[in-house]
Length: 235
Image 1 (cartoon, rainbow, N blue to C red):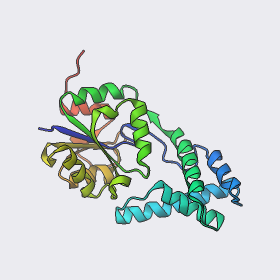
Image 2 (spheres, rainbow, N blue to C red):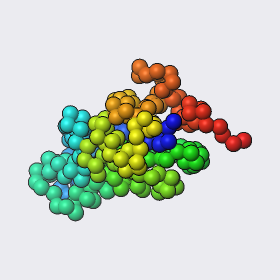
Image 3 (cartoon, helix red, strand yellow):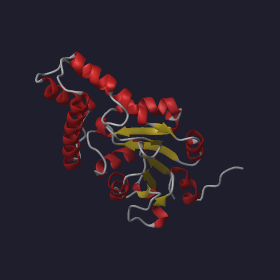
């Protein structure tokens, strides 16, 4: 019987846009321009996406996580043609994350849902992110941080999903064995395959049936998990 439920964050506990364009990044652009960046706005976005994609590809191949600070530093160095100061990098990253966050949306009823699950399960979080403070801020704002026994971020751990070691690390923190653990996420490779490779029972949020997973492991939405686990809701 499952005693522990581990969750992904982005795309699972919150909806979000992964876009590096559509949110609008005028403040980030202003930080660059004030530092002497010669790029026009669209050139700025193109270069930011190029540098970010390079970091993503390297991380996908190595499973080693990078920090947003490292991306910001590399971008500014390429955009300005010189090494940026730590203060400039921090200012740019703060501005960028604030604007990227405009694409994050909280799920109605999440606190109540997690509270019900926590009555009979130990909850924990395993998420890929390049900024751990971003996760903490969202959990506190939603009002659910107290419901998680452990929060494991790839940038703090060093490796990212789907590497099995990050799942094993999280299970070790809460004293869980794979056979009594569930993992819930929205990405087939990182979440479903990653959790499964660590011996956990994995569920994939896949309303459009884009991935080849058993129906018993597919969720139309996060809240269907209670039905899959046979948890009765109080009327």
